[in-house]
Image 1 (spheres, rainbow, N blue to C red):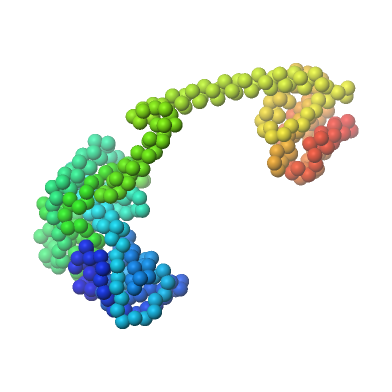
Image 2 (tube, rainbow, N blue to C red; image 1 turned 60 degrees about the vertical axis):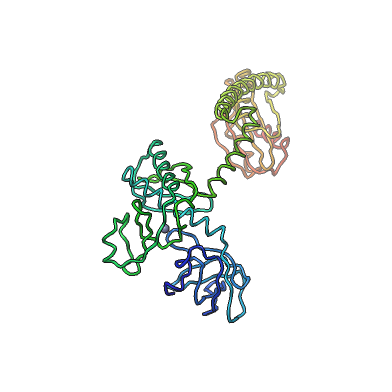
Length: 398
Ligand SMILES: [Zn+2]
């Protein structure tokens, strides 16, 4: 498509236009698209996402440039007509213009102040990011670049675009070598930034509104800087306000004391966890004594539980055989899907728990591990807990 037919280059503020249909087609996946005689729809490119809107009343879901042809993908196929009206989703486009121009300015600020070049740019749904070709960026450097960028916005400098030839290009101090050799489009913020760029931009820096750096992230040997511009600054502020207000309410702490309150909460949580653990140990010891008192004549102590962990069963079994050297302990726990068991013997007993385990595991299609003195295992709930205990007792008396 020729340059003059790309209406977004004539006027980045054009929201509605008329065009003739050049062709209607479908891509390989059966998605219908239309090619127009001219268009104000910006196709995905140069880090800027495509426009949305409607053509002939049909929603445009994607716009891609393929071999110089701009394909407008439609939510449903279109009847051939003489002329169509295109309407750009202006909120989306203007947001892209703000983020895109803001990126130029922030990138230029990092170069101007610290010589950190930007190597890539991503315009996401919520946040925008640039990757700086430097491993470490300090908080002070971030604040300084943000400050300079916002000064450029406040000064409301013009943002000019100019088509130049390769020879003319030499007069400009460009930030980045350009890959394109003909039809070079320069985006110029006088005395600040000269950039080869095919995106859409507002006509002055003031329209970017505000630039706010949200955070950074290490990216191999680079630093990713997340930021937002224009309307997105307010969105982020509202979002964070809601979150902070909610946290502050939950913690009954003032908004500027939320992190302190969370620290206190975490440390008291830690203390509680510790004391709960100790209380559990005490309870287990009591439980072990009680179970030890119920030894059958043949020396077996057995019990079945619901929803207890194998770790708890192990602890309990150890405590019982410490209590009573002559005891054999069989403990079984069932939960939603599994049956687990522990078998332990006191120091004065010679029967092998490993053999008991080997005998009963086939009943559960289960697996186990341990030694002659102590085993644990588990499997499917193919028998009842009390049946498993019976089987263990039978096995040990063999
Ligand atoms: Zn640009």
